[in-house]
Image (cartoon, rainbow, N blue to C red):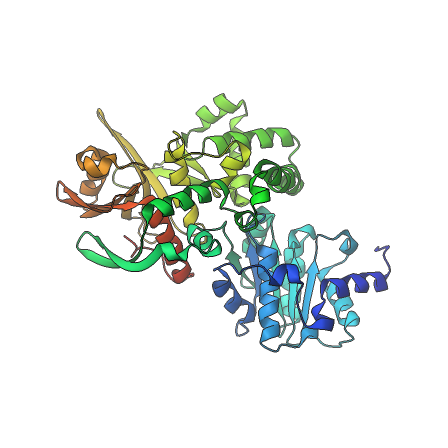
Length: 485
C-alpha cells in the first residue's frame, strides 16, 4: 500500500521533468561537458528496430545520471515531443511500494496522455526497486513501441540480473571510470596531442603522439590521483578533500549500504577493511592463503567478497596463465586491481612520480582503460621452469581458441629502454609463443630495440593509456582489440 496521495507523486514527477513545461533539462546538467562515451551510448537510446530496454551500468559517480540527462537534451534538440520523455529517479522514497507500471501510469496522468507509444522512459537508480528486472521485462513486452532506458550504481545486481533475467530483452552498456583520453578532453589539454604513427615491429599503425611528453606526464600523474571521477576533474575544492568525497560516495554507499543490502552481508566493517586492503595493494599477486593470513578473513568469505566487489565494478581480478598462456587447472594465484586508480590516492594519500607505488599504479591505470570492454579476456603470465621464473604483466587471450594475442610489460622507468636485454621474461614469453614483437611502457622514451629477434617497442605509459582509450571508443562493441599490438 502506498500512503502518499497520487497527486503528490505527480507533483514530484513534474518537478523531475521540467522539460514538460520549459522544454529544457536543468542547467546543472546542461552546463556539464558530455563524456566521450555519449556518442556510443546515444545511438542505443534511439535504436528502435530491436525490442530491448537499455541498461546503463557502472560504478558510482562516473556520470550515469548526467548521461541520461544529456540523452534527454539530445532528444529535445531533435524535436521529440517533451511530453513523450519521462524521467524517474527510483531512489526517491516517494516511489516505495510502486511498480514500474504504476509509476508509468502516474507519468501518463501527469501529462494527460492516454498512450506511451513512441515515448522514451528513463528510470534512474533502478536497483532500488525490488525485482526490477522482472518489472522491466514485463514493460518491454507490454509496450513494444516504447523505449525504456534504466541506470543503476549497484552494479552487482544490475550485471547479474540483467544477464540472467532479461535474456533477449536488455542491452547492457557499461560506463567505466573516466579514461585518460576523456580526462585530457575535459581538461582541455588536447593541444598536447597530435595524430601520427608508430612502428610496432614491421607494422606502422595510427597513434596519437605528444608535442610535450613531460607536460603530458604531469597530467598523467594528476589523472592517477584525481582523474577517475568526472566531477572531481574540474573541481579543485573536491580534490582538496578527496578522502571525504570517496568515503561518502564509495565506502558508505557501496560498501556499507548497497552490497550488504543486496547480499545480506552482516559484517560490513569487515568488507570495508577488506576493500581498503585490496585498494592499498592494487596490482599485487595474491592467493587465498595469503589473503586469509594477511586479512584474517576466512577463505570462503574472501571468495564472496571478491565476487561482490568485482560485480560492483570496484575491482578487476586477473587470472594467471603460464609461459605458453595456458590456464592453470587450479587457481592458486591471481592479481587484483582497482578499476579506478584515483580510489587508492583518495583512500590513502596522493602519489608522487618517484614513489615506489608508481609501478603498480601505472599497471592499474592501463587496466582501467580497457574497462568498457567487459568481455576482454585479459590475463597475466607467471611461470617457474626449473630455476627460471618469469612474469608478463598483461596477456590478451583470443576468446575463441584461448591462444595468446599479445603481451605487454608495464614499466614506469626508462631503464629497460637503455638495457632491453634485461627483459628476459618478456623475451622468453615471446619466443615460446612465436611472437615477433612486444610492447613495453616507459616514462618518456619511444623507439624499438631488437632482442633475440624480438622487436620490442617502447612507448611512454601516458601515450599508451591515451591511445587505449581512443581505440576503445572507436571500437565500441564491434572489435576485440586484437589489432592493437
